[in-house]
Length: 308
Ligand code: GRG
Image (cartoon, helix red, strand yellow):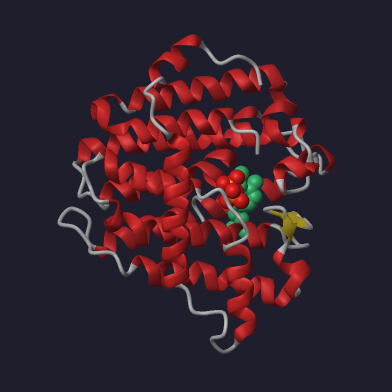
C-alpha cells in the first residue's frame, strides 16, 4: 500500500495494543453470540447449523469491536454494549449470506470457507439470512435501554441502517449499476449505504449504550461515516491487489463483474489517497473524546492498513 501521510502516523502513535484489543473482544463477542443464538441442535437443526456456520466462520468482528470501542470512548461499560455489538454482527453476517447467493453476487467462498448456499443449499441459505436478521432484534432486546436511548430508539437505529434507505438501498443500486458506467457521486451513494451505514450504526450504538450526549453522538456519527466509507474504498482496492487466499473470498470479482469501484473510476493511487483522507477526517472527529478514543483511533488506522 502507498505510504500513509506522516500526520496520520503521528496522530495514532498511542502505543495502544490493538492486536490484544481485537483478540480479547473477538473472544468475548464469540462467547456472547454463542450464548445468544439457539444451539445447533435446536429443532429444526439445519437452520441453526446454517446460521452458526456463517456466524462463526472467522469474520474479523470489526463492527462489534467498533461498537465496544465507542462505548468505552463515551465512558460506558463494554458489557452494556455487548448485545448491540452482537446484533450488528448478525445483521452484517445476514447481508453477506444473501449477497453471496446466485441471484446476487454468486460467490463460492466467504471468510475462507464455502459460502452458506454451497453447503446448505439456496433455500436454507436464504432462510439462514432471514433468521440472522430477525435474531439481531431479539438480541438487541436484551440491552438495558438508556434514558436518552430507550429500546425503541435502539430498534429504529438498527432497522434504519439495515433497511431500504441504507443497506438495502446500497445493494439495490449496486445490483442495478453492474455493467454500467456510473459517476463517482453515484458510487459514493452506494458505498455510503452498502457499507458505511452499518459501520456507522455500530459506532453510534456503542455510544448510545453509554447514554452518550448528543454532541458525542454527532462526533461518533462523523467518525463512523468516514471510517465506513474508507473501509469500502479499501475493500475495492484489496479486490484488485490481493489474492483469493489472502481475502478469504474470491478476488478480482469486481472487475470481472464489471462493477463500478473506486480503483475502476479514479485509479489505485487516487483511491489510496481518498481512503487516507477519509481516515484523517475520522481521526479529526475523535477530537472531543481527548484520550478516551484510543481504541477507535487505532481501529481506524488498522482498517486503512488492512490487507484482508
Ligand atoms: C442486504 C443482501 C443484502 C446485501 C447488503 C453488505 C452487502 C449489501 C453486501 C455484502 C458484500 C459487500 C461488498 C459488502 C460491503 C461491506 C463489506 C466489505 C463487507 C465485508 O466486511 P468484513 O471485511 O467481513 O468486515 P468479515 O467477513 O471480516 O466480517
